[in-house]
Amino acid sequence: MKEKLEEIQTQGLKEIENANSISELQEVRKNLTGKKSELSKVLKSLGSLSLDERKEIGIKTTEIKNIFLDKLKEKEDMIVASKKVLDEPIDLTLPGTKINRGTLHPITQMCYDLNDAFLSLGFEVFSEDDISSEKFAFDNLNFAPDHPARQMMDTYWLEGTEDKAANERLCLRPHLTGASVRYLLKHGAPARFVYPGRVYRNEDIDSGHERAFFQYEALIVDKDMSFSSGMVMIQTILEKVFGREIKVRMREGFFPFVEPGYEIDMECLVCGGKGCKVCKHNGWLEIMPGGVIHPNVLKSAGLDPDEWTGFYVNIGLERLVMMRYGVDDIRLFHSADLRFLDQFK
Ligand SMILES: [Zn+2]
Image 1: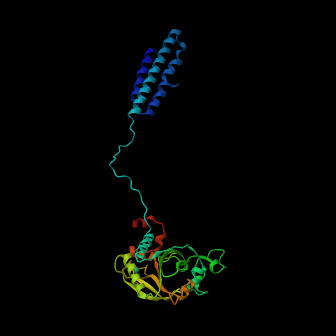
Image 2 (image 1 turned 120 degrees about the vertical axis):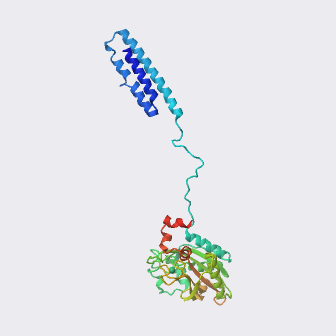
């Protein structure tokens, strides 16, 4: 029996020595000191022995168990002390993980660039709410009562106000021009200001049209203003935004709030004037309708048309951005697709 106990001790100490992790050590502890261990089996088999022998073997067994427990504790301390803080070696000189930073949307950037250009010419930046009314969207601006733009086809009227009129008939602003009268009523003339913002139209969406898009309108009101000073302003703005000479042409255009009205086209920079789907294959793109402010609009703003004159330009921001970067589909700007937007960082 004694030899058996010595063998158990020798074997047990070897197992403790060979354990290399806390989990292995726990397994060894269970095997050596648990209910099913060899030591427990020895104690259970003492029944056939004399009292003295039982006592002797019992003491010896307890001794061995205590030796095991001491050695287990010693080994555990050793493993814990030798354990590395990090599983992998670390190189503190390596560059860190790159933080994905956001950037201004190309339309916002274009808007800021235009603000800078206009501010440098002495303009003020003005903004108003996206919800407008029939009075400001149409009545003030010399739109005939039966003008098709007033119909559901083009304008988003707000539910519950469709059968009302003027100030009480509300809509998502279909253009920015209403803001010009609001500004003039508040600040009077002379005035030069820009008013950027989102506008809403009930349009069929294609590569050149969106239901919500940005506009950027500018208005100068003054006495004795010449048409040519307006042209100089437009050229100055385009040169500032594109940083080079741009081919532009002017055509007659009709808008209710101007007289005369015009359309300014610029040569399509996506195709270089050869024709593509953005410019509807004619090499030119309408970017800026405008004209001399209509006398009826001046009257709506409380100004005397015999005393004051002025003119509008209305810049399609998306189209300018498309020209700036050669983007051929307007829908990309509102797609929230990071693969597209990341290119403008
Ligand atoms: Zn083109």
